[in-house]
Structure formats: C-alpha cells, structure tokens
Length: 142
Image (cartoon, rainbow, N blue to C red; front, side, top):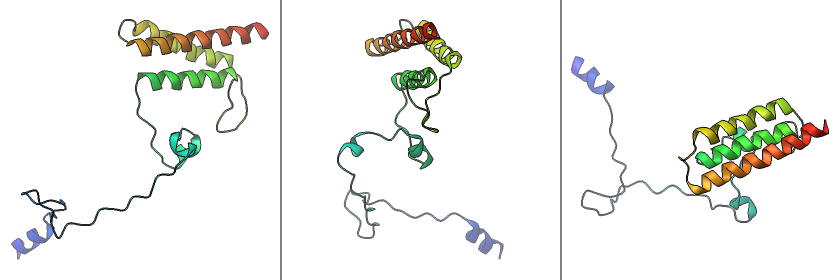
C-alpha cells in the first residue's frame, strides 16, 4: 500500500517533443499553437512604451546602455516640462528633480569614460549637452 501511495505522488513525465530521436516527426505530437497575425502599419512598427502598455502587461523591449540613457533623458525632459506626464497628461516642471537626473547622467559619463563604444559615447554626450542647455535656459527664465 505504501508503494501505491508513492507511485501516485510521483512525477508524471509527458514527452511533448515534435520529433522522435531519429529526427522524424512524431504522429502523436501536439499541434503547433496558432499564432495571431501581427498587425501591420505604424502601430506594429513602434513598440509600446506607454503606461497603458505597461498596465496591460506588455513586456518592455531589451535594456542596454543606450535605452537606459534614453530612459533617464526622458525623465529629465519630463521634469523640465518638455513633455507631458504620461499618467496625468499634464506638463509639470520640477527643476530640482531635472537637475538631479542630469547630474546622474553626468556621473554615468564620468564613470564610463573610455568604456563605451562610439555610438554610446555620442548618445550620452549629445543627450547631456541638450539637457544641460535646456536646464540653463529654464533657470535663466525663472
């Protein structure tokens, strides 16, 4: 009786491979799942990077140094009042927060000097220059 209970509690292994060891297709293989056709047009070309897409559970794209820099620059632009807050659709200006994010990008530039490829270095330098100029213009206006 103990053996019978152990057999019931054991693992059940199901072979779901489409091909046998010899490389031939198996007759009892499960059918391939149907894939919905991808939408065409501009909506298909642009990956969803909105708060609505995040709420729907759409995974973000791959993260690398360039996307990290772009994400920080977007935060700085948001704090500078250059783009609307995606949650409230209102333009909000917080120069102290913008300066903080710009300083973080400056630290990244300093700490990664001579460790970036040419494209990453150009991106970081141009983003920092642009953000610093926008920040200085806004500080002079206030």
